[in-house]
Amino acid sequence: MKVLLVFAHPAPRSLNGSLRDVAVHELSAQGHEVQVSDLYAINWKASVDRGDFPTLRKAARLMVPGASRAEYEAGTLTADVRAEQQKMLWADGLILQFPLWWFSMPAILKGWVDRVYSYRFGYGVGEHSERKWGDRYGEGTFAGKRAMLIVTAGGWESHYSQRGINGPIEDLLFPINHGILHYPGFDVLPAFVAYKMDLLSAEEFEPVAARLRDRMREFFTTAPIAYRRQNGGDYSIPGCELHDGRERRGAGGFALHIAGQSGHEQGNGTLMESMEY
Image 1 (tube, rainbow, N blue to C red):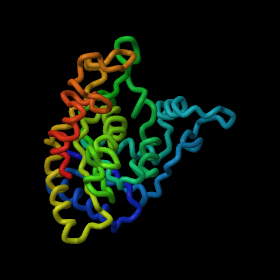
Image 2 (cartoon, helix red, strand yellow):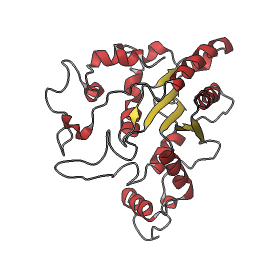
Image 3 (cartoon, helix red, strand yellow):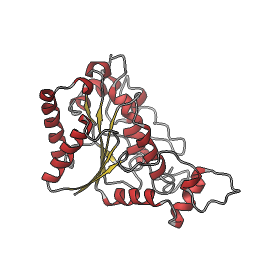
């Protein structure tokens, strides 16, 4: 199988870089082909601007979705974007690896998503009607492929628990897991999260690396998060609201969109146990 790892950390010799090497080595040892897009090493352009749309007339107003669609359909997106899109189509699995900065991914990785996920590639796919609202959330360009996050955090695990001051880690990562990965069709695996990375000693690194090796060995067999499919009957179309009675009692917020999960169970049950913190 083939895996694309998108790496977003400015220091290649960091603990994050060491975890990247562990992941690549283990995937390769399992017989998988691996490509790495090191965004800082290639000086990835993070901002979307007129330069991303070479055929856009100088006098034309920049409306990003329309311009993105025109360039994608004409095959005239910039070379760097087209190269990353080809890697994504090549891969059976995608890994996004990054440090948790201000409760999200670094800007360079968000910019990779903004530019690579062009109209008709990452979004704007499929029929939009009274019967079906696009190929998204379980359908789309990457349906049948797998994705997961490798995330490092400086804070303690307890800081990201259900009662932790930072909020539950699964809630913080929901916009990425559900919005960036599940939206265009990926089956999303529970994230691998490593805590206290700023304070980690050499002796403490090896158990973290061992857990990551386990996750890489199980990358193509781990059960994905049971996100509901938008067009699978659970949601109204085109309103895209969950039908009454589909949730378990007491469920709310992000937990509504995980089949069979209540808010309490999402934080303290099988999902958390499978996240290998």
